[in-house]
Amino acid sequence: MTNSIAIRIADFLGKYPPFSLLDDVQLNSIAQEVRVSYFEQGKAIFLKDEKVHDLFYIVHKGAVDLQKVKENGEPETIDKCDEGDVFGLRPLFAKENYQINAITDEESIVYAIPIEHFKPLATSNANVGNFLIESFASNTRNPYSSEHRGKLFDDQDEISFKQEALFDLQPVAVVKKMITVSKDTSLKKAATLMSKKRVGSVIVVEDKKPVGIVTDVDFREYVGTGIFGIETPVEKVMTSPVICYSKGITLAQAQLTMMKHKINHICITKDGTPNTKVKGIVSEHDIMVSQGNNPSVLMKAINRASSTPKLNRIQSKVLYLLEGYMKNNIPVTHVSKIIFELNDATIKRTIVRCIDKMDAPPPCNFAWMSLGSQGRKEQLLHTDQDNAIVFEDVPEDKLEETRAYFLKLAKRVTKRLNIIGFEFCPAEMMARNPKYCLSLSEWKQQFTTWITSSGMDDILLCQIFFDFDITYGDVKLTNAISDHIFKTLKENKLFLNRLAVQALRNPSPLGFFRQFLVEEGGEKKDLFDIKKRGIMPLTDAARLLILEHRVKNISNTAERFEKLAQLEPNNKELYLACAYSSKVLLKFRTRQGLKYKSNGRFINLEDLSKEDKVKLKRCFKTIKEVQELIKIRFETAYHS
Image (cartoon, rainbow, N blue to C red):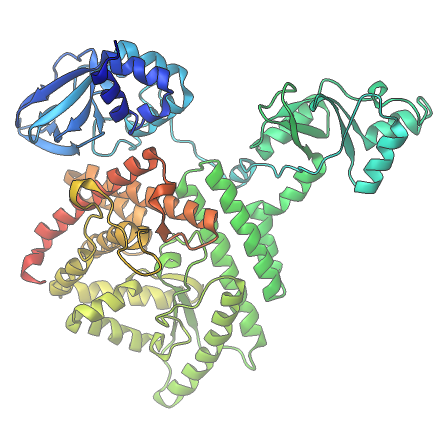
């Protein structure tokens, strides 16, 4: 007889990772063993120091608070589990007592899953194991903190990469238009095909499976020396067996394989063995060509570029580099730093070339400031350019003449950046706008006005200017602006209160029944705005809180939260969770942008896996909690 309860349980579990990563047979076998438990509000599922159960749990309905017990014995909620959230798993693998409490926040139905039935699946299924390492490595709010990373199975440390090493982790471009021949094909015919197609090898196949390879080296070694005649079958000279890999082999893997086996071609098959259909080929020449996407090579090319079209072509390679990093799941912290440096160098090179083409050198010292995502070192995709110029104070009678020079320079620079791929800012927040091409004294006065007398609309407009980074010019000018900002802020707490109200204008993007809030009309109808509803709330929160502490020279959102974790140990877990969430959301946007050749802002939720949706929901929990902190700290109810 069919167990209808087990079927319903399997249907539910299949919606959420890691269970969604199991096949139907595995899922049904787990569902058969699940124990269903009902808990009233306020009941303990387990308590700190309690001996670990032989079960772990997933919330079916209701909510469960995970609580850390403070030194004074008072419980503090560090995470809230709702529908589909798993808890109580790490202690089972770590073989330790519970380190936290699990208390129901409301009436709840919880599924209890025996570890003896689940653990074999976790250890044998790579996808399940990887997900658990990422998602459930701790029972804290921030399951991805370095303190707990990887403790499910081992003590892996977070890998640290050099920029050159990151390049080696890119996938090799596979040539799909290869030539295949049968064993009895003559060397003459094979050579004719290679010459006609301008390729350096032919793959010998049997039932479409690779059994050998003949390269131009073989023709030199065996035919050119007279060992074999041109009518000899290729079988006599082919190299066999063929070294095979599946699609996705990295540059490092390919290079090491060629060195190890003393070959210059690798065959690509469906499963990476000679037992499946051949899909393409990688040659030593292909790898040499790929070297052009090494970040150090690209940096040299940028610094030597003598025209805007050349910079445009280099930027296309930068995007290819970015795509390789995303495919190989390189940590976004490392990726951001490399892409920022390449973008920054591109802007700098553009400025230098434009100065060289001006009728005269700059009349005084100046600095080009990058604002917004580039100023925060978060501009992975080509989005709007936001920039400004600050120039040295000059005599009053020279002010407008000096400004005219820099406006002319800015128009040339922004035009060329637009050609390269950095679109014009729709709001004209660019250095070519006279409002944002100011002397040092004018900038100081502008920030004083914003901080001391801004209304809500002004604050919405000006807050991007608190995320600036110098790209070119005199750093003393930008440092002077920073010093002035923090001196003025010290005496004007009201500005921070108003900034706090603006930081709350985009609340947590989950609506009733924990569904994503999507656009309701227009061409973006039913799409999710990840910038407005995900990235901006964290960006705004980080800016506000770092300004409150008057910390200079940290503009990156994740780095701001990591600094805040040091400054406020009592909120460390929350801030580290915010840092992590900002990286996750940036990665989501980047992947969407690369996939659809866009700025990645609007996401079709149907394209996301259940696992991705769960990850996003976890990020949005963090947004809600940091916004709650802001509401209390800045008393926003009195200033809205």
